[in-house]
Length: 273
Image (cartoon, rainbow, N blue to C red):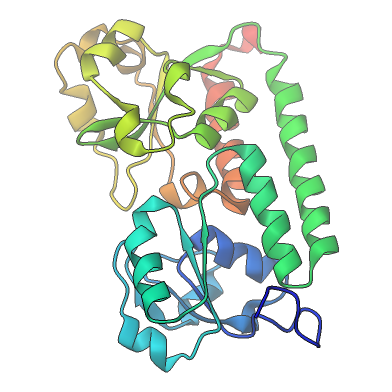
């Protein structure tokens, strides 16, 4: 069955196993949460999603449990869940694998999911609201007389710099990413950097978000040559919860970017705001 082609417009898909956290949050925002019958074990937004059956980690899925839920659509995310998507297809399940990497792709994905659920107008309103919010933050950041150099650390072993939407949000919030040449590289392994490169580029602020793991500030401060980095010397190492920045959806566009902007605005001295 093709998306949106059922006799009752918007009734397909009726039973969604949503292994993509940002998609689950969007479906709740659209008021269609009753269609979700299963989620990832890492799903946290909104808190109500915890009441849904948990049928996967991020990389592995319990297909016996999924089969019992009788889904008509499985939503996955990125190349990291490629094996889940492949296995689901081999088992005859309908699969939608989203792979958004930039802000533009996030908005396109929101629009697509809203259309699939028969909520195109609502999706459009959310997109307009989020775009306006980003414009307001960018307008405030434009009053900074200096853009702070920001190193966003997505993982620590190996060191991985920020994915494109994160780097774009850092810029909107008033920062200047120190690895702009890596942002469009879609695979994490292509954004691996060395600590020596970080030291050389000397960020004013380090924002760290280690997906699924608490950031260890002491480990960062203990790295060779860390005492030469402005961010370390001034104590500007900040954790950004992965649930609000490493999910390419509503959370990053709202809470995530607002937190980054607040950190940057509090770091810039008052006479530079």
